[in-house]
Image (cartoon, rainbow, N blue to C red):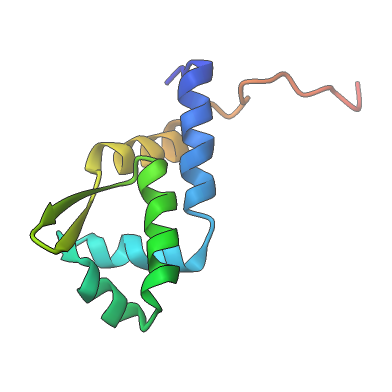
Length: 105
């Protein structure tokens, strides 16, 4: 799967967003389906401000989407983005995008 520079930049942003244990927990909690922010706060036993920061990182990376219903906000995994990261990890060319300098030979 050949990726453009823009796609690679987006993939890097998504992988960085996934590099935090709390954000990985959020992803795991959203796998079964949409969750209210109050449910996430309770499940993670986290302060709302801390959770909001992590959700913003995931949203900015395109890994989650949100919708407002009255005073509540519901979050869902952006399945296409998650699948794109999974595809990158499983189908990335073994040679990479940059030619590594050969140290021997």
